[in-house]
Amino acid sequence: MNVTYIHHSGFLVETERFYYLFDYAKGRLPKMDPAKPVYVLASHSHGDHFNPEVFSLLAEAGMQQIRAVLSDDIHPPADTSALLVSPETEYALGEAQKLKTLRSTDLGIAFLIEDRDALIYHAGDLNDWVWDEESEADNAEMTENYRAQIALLAKTLRGRTIDVAFVVLDPRQEDDYHRGLVWFLEKISAKRVYPMHYWGESAIIQRFLADYPQYKQQIQITE
Image 1 (cartoon, rainbow, N blue to C red):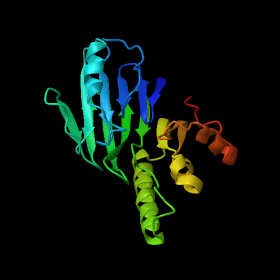
Image 2 (tube, rainbow, N blue to C red):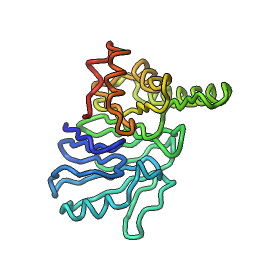
Image 3 (tube, rainbow, N blue to C red):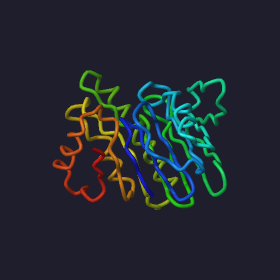
């Protein structure tokens, strides 16, 4: 299984049978096998997570089988057929493929994909969005909602290990930057974890590893 970081929260995962392109906003797409189906997955409609130009870019690259799986707050282009998905729902994507969605703590969903060859998680904007300027009550509610979704993820996994996970690590949260990722790592078994949504400030990954060296074997350096 190959993983390519594109930009912000955008990643391309290649398994034996499929490509999964998550939250493309901008950036150069890597060279791909035109005959292999590609799933375009977008967690919500914010411009840093969904760019409708992705479909024309894939078509220009010669991709012959483009399948869109979009959060139901997204309005796909008129000429694009898409599966619109809702939070906390299960879907069959195809033969031996399942999708479980979680409810974002911002907008839209998070993805858990059960491929025959891999178990893949992409958080979208599901994170413990605690901010200094918010009230204690609002921050407490945020943390409760986030942890409830991670508990739902753990229940869905039933002890299984995620092969690849993409999880928010946002430096704008300052001293609370680590909250969502640390809770995820404490509660969920994952082989490879890719921090994302760090707004070009990739040094936050090294800061995290300095603060939490016990996770060096799991955390992947994207750039």
